[in-house]
Image (cartoon, rainbow, N blue to C red; front, side, top):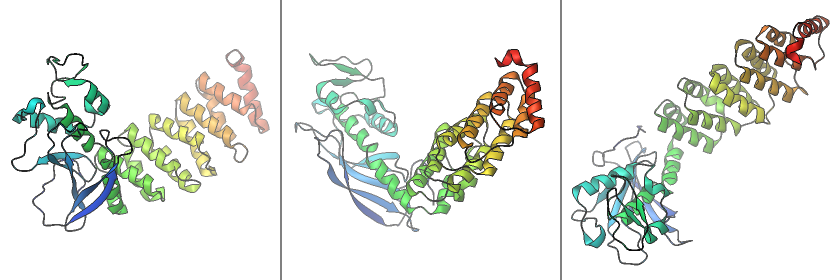
Amino acid sequence: MTLLTGVYSYHDFQDSIVMHEITIDHPGFLPADDRNFILYEKLDVDKHPIHYYMNVESTICLEGVCKIVPVRLYWNPLGQYIEYELDKGVTLEKTEGRPFLEEDYVILHDLLKDPQSAYRDIRYDQITKEKVVGENQIDAISGATSIILAKGQTVVGAAWTCFTLWHWAHGPVVQVIRGLTGTSLTSVQLKKLLKGSDDDIIFALEELMRRGGEPMEYIDQMTYLLNSYNSEVLRLIIQYLEQSSGSSYCEPMRLLLNAANGKQRISLLTSILKSTSALDEPFLNDLTELMIHTNEYQEINMCFLVYQKLESTHHPDFDRIAELLNRPILIARRAYWYLSEKQLSPDLKQKLDRFELENRESLY
């Protein structure tokens, strides 16, 4: 099974098509006017999705004065727009009945490929009450406010069509497609996706969160992901783990913490601090080792905060923590104030008193 971004051939397979009746909204619809559509899923011979497509109208024109033509939109299995298709002999029109030029079709395709297109933040009422024009265009409509878009961000004179099709391409149907594809995947396929592109990884993690389940089954893949830091990927990994509790949270979090770099450890420790899952003795011991081997005050301070959170059930190795008294004063002082509140052995208490005597000016 291939689940990669890019263009898929629509003619090279002799496979089946599954029809899904879906109910979706569009910002151009009237309130509470969700409508039913048929989403087509094309499958390969192994019954894996190749792509999806849906037939829509080129514009949503409540006034009934626009030329409306059918447009077929295609998405890959991750719900990413691939291309649009018109029936043979059908053309799109701009204002005053002017046909699209060849370059207009290219611009339309490019803006539909862009999930961050300017049309993402333009509302339907702005299309109806204002005028969207392209760079260096003059607003010829008296009394209308212009929304000026850069060259290539719109087909000049076709704001209705650009707005309508962009919101079809990137609207609720995307999550429907991702859900259908996710449901069809086996755990083996999900593990393969977790070593793919960023888009594949994010898709797989979102599907894992939807399913729930045992994180340890995927711990090797999640540890692998730490090798190339991506804040969005790490956020999703943590969010996935936070759905679990007890050892299902504790053990994979411990393994990830041991494999993480400093920036990643801060994010993981933040999750640990707010977690309600019980942390066990091995976890506590690993935190102590982390403190001994890092020079980052923020990490060490967060470990102490975890200790304080757990002190009703677990106590760390005070002798190991006392090794921090030999570190730079900022770290040593944090260790001193933590240990000064604990019941210590006579030898350790003597060591702490000696540290206080030698560093009194830095402690108070």
